[in-house]
Structures are given as C-alpha cells and as structure tokens.
Image 1 (cartoon, rainbow, N blue to C red):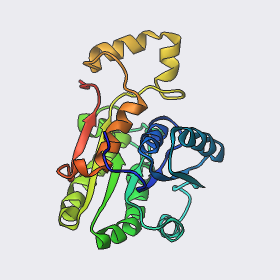
Image 2: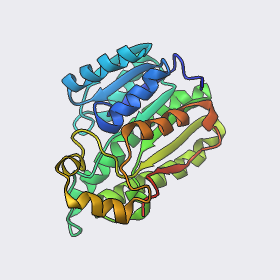
Image 3: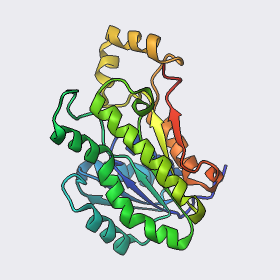
Image 4: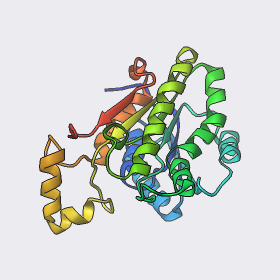
Length: 252
C-alpha cells in the first residue's frame, strides 16, 4: 500500500540500532530521503548500507551527541544543510539513568534532558518552518513506562513528561497542519537490548516477565514499532493529533 511518503525529507534522531534502525528501514522501504543522527559513525554507515539495499532515495548521516552539542544550533545547521524536514522522529533517551528514587536534582535533570529536553530544544528550531509551510510530522518515541508508571522512577517520570509535552503542544499545533504524536513501545528485544542476553541464555526471568506482563506472551520487534511510526508520518494519520499510542503487546 502506497502511503504517500516517497521522496519525503525525514530526520531521524537516534537511528543507529534497535528501534531506531528499524525506523530507518521503515522509511527506506517508502523511498524517503533520510538524514540519520547518532553518536557512532560506524553504526550509522552500517545502517546506511542496509537502507540503500532496500531502496532509500537518499541517505545522509551526521555524527552527533545531542547531550553534548548545542541542540538549537545543531538543528539550525541541519535545516540549512538539508532543508525543511517533512518528518522528524526523535528516538532519543533511555533507561540508562539513575535508578535511585532519592536521587538529587542533578540526576533528575539528566534524565529529563536525555529523554525529553534535548528533543524539545531541537523542536524549537525544527517546528517553525513546518508551521510556516502548513504541514509536517513530529514523532517522539516514548515508553509504556510513561503510562504504567513503574520500574525506574526517573525514566518513567521523564517519559511521562514527554507524553504531557506531546499532548499539550500537539493540541496547540493542531490548527497549523503539523501533527505531533508519540509511540509508547513496550518490551522490545533486539541484538544488544536489555532483554537480548536473557533471551539467549534462556533465563527464567524471561518466562516470568512474559507470563506476568505480556498478554501476547512475547517481546516486540523494532519493525513492529517502526510500522506504527511510518503510519504516523503519513497523511493517513491526520486524526491522531497529540496522541500517545501504546505499542506494547497488551502490557499488564
């Protein structure tokens, strides 16, 4: 099914592995023009080779760590180099932050910047030209932790902040023609992921987790998350404004 994404200018922040790589492949199959941002040049090049084999219209990459760079200037430089983006996907952050529920403000600020604030800073530059043009898609990768509110308090709270941002800002954007929404993945297994080593070892923790928390009794795949992201990027998602969509195998 042609969903009208051919030749769209797509920026993916964090597309070097796992869910991010799956998202790159999803847009590559739609013959988009992709700009991929990540910290590892080697991984970016590997993903690029795969994307070109699939049939991506063009693939460019930029090596950057958004936790270290001036995110506003970086976003401005991207627009100057590649033009206004039709689609922006923020696949940034993660649970590799302090798990101490009594952590001080420094740890909480880091978790927020890692999972939310760096993307918001980029959006302050990326969104205005989309609004001026009257169309565009901004998609954030959140987490089902934002809805379930369990596990790592800092991570879950940061993703809940992200969901609130998507809902409130998405509503403000609704009259402009720019759609903002998020995907909330559940437990996804891929090479190098948190669950990967446990699956390979046949660890009893896997069976216990699936039985108690996954109604579908399996882990998700990066491709399954990417399928939803690609749909969100199309005009067929036009009534999903400000939505935070769970893709979690009926997490319990």
